[in-house]
Figure: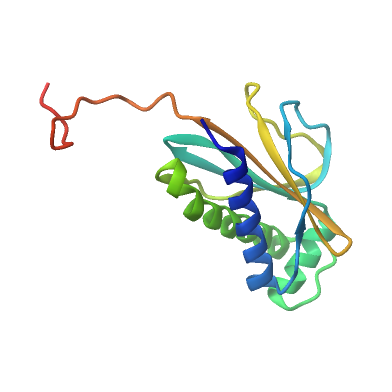
Length: 174
């Protein structure tokens, strides 16, 4: 069973580290919650990365367009006021760094995890959802007046093949 507190702590640690080290910004995490409902329509940007291994799932970083521009301005030391390739790339990279930091810490109790390449979605009045009714853990953050969320959905990988192993831990002959 996944220990939610450990997952939340790893997400907080990774997010705080990325924002402090890469952006020179202090963030504060709010009270995490769980959600099984499909999200309503969104306006903004979502960065998504899949996880695979003994546990499978998805991690997302979501924020408004103005927050994405602010983060990109800090990251690239230039002024960004509208969404373009640089902002989308920056959100992709921030998502990748946060999930990579999470992965490093979480592997100590979830086992080895692989990451997909980041996907970034931007638009007005769009919805993103996961098939099924898996539970999402939502960790809200604030950075000054800016708000964003990190969400994670993890479930045990029930599709891993079970191969017979011998006493040495090697695949046994069939």
